[in-house]
Amino acid sequence: MDEETLNRLAAEALMEEAKVGARRAEVMGPSGWIKPKHTINKRFLHSTLRNAVLSNKHHPVQKDKLSDDRCKRDSDNNK
Image (cartoon, rainbow, N blue to C red; front, side, top):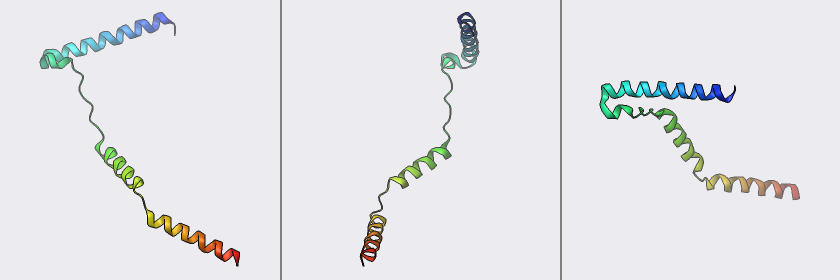
């Protein structure tokens, strides 16, 4: 696309957005110009936070268990 076409499309999009805002303003008053807030996906947010918290927990017992297993294998190999 050339620059002239892009400018024309941008102007059309801005005019359409202004028309929609004006219609909302007629019904809702001045606050109609403010775009509506999008709602968050609460299920996604909760699962993401839960998984982040679980993955950030430290498990020192597992680390000790792994190091004990390695020590046992090393001592068995040295015999």
